[in-house]
Image (cartoon, rainbow, N blue to C red; front, side, top):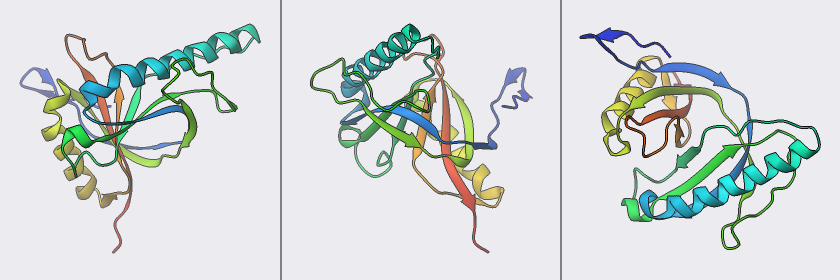
Length: 176
């Protein structure tokens, strides 16, 4: 990600790249992220770390990646009605997941990507608006359009002094 200097400060710039499909452990939620995240993320990490330890016993090593979340209706409804699709990458050949939290199902899915546009947002989640707008304008100016749901990849924890989040959208060329 290119970080040009602006007034002595690094400014994240959007980029277009190609990403392959990713096998994911996934939890679905409904409601405000601040209220549903803890239980969902706990179940997700619990399952993925248990999988990691089970695979390690078989000689398979994998590092647990960064948390991702998709927000398909965040732009349509109030945040207390948001659908959250929380995910962690798992090895491609994973066919089942251990369940750690009895009332939260962790599912397996393949998230398809292809051509995506993304930008690094530095700051609180609640202040992503201008960064998202910048990404949308970049996509349009490059001759593309958004072709899927808003996704975030959390590079830091919510309690980090400075939060860093990759904001990503699948894109496709505009029809001429």
